[in-house]
Image 1: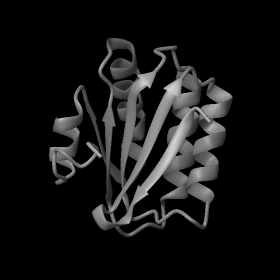
Image 2 (image 1 turned 180 degrees about the vertical axis):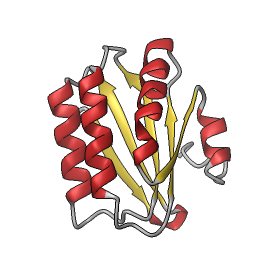
Image 3 (image 1 turned 90 degrees about the vertical axis):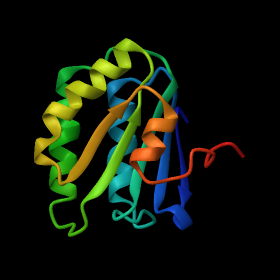
Length: 132
């Protein structure tokens, strides 16, 4: 699975690690299943790790569909979650920032970072959280 999910409930965090190349359809399918799952606490913050993802362009249409789906899925959520994206290379950083522009309809705080330490600090988590 090119997107791996890890839950750290003690830190109110779900980590979504992208690996390799993930086509638009697979990307959208994963996130639809993730946000519709009864096993996911939608009040937990998210850390999206793109450090091992291939920098293949994601279509604007897929980003727009993703924003619309997430906006409707989270419309009833009272808690505003934080989403930190780690995108070290230029292409993934640019695509994540493009999504950020679409996500104004989504009830969350979405910020793109180049490095893990900055993302963890913004989430209020210890820098060594993922060392083990």
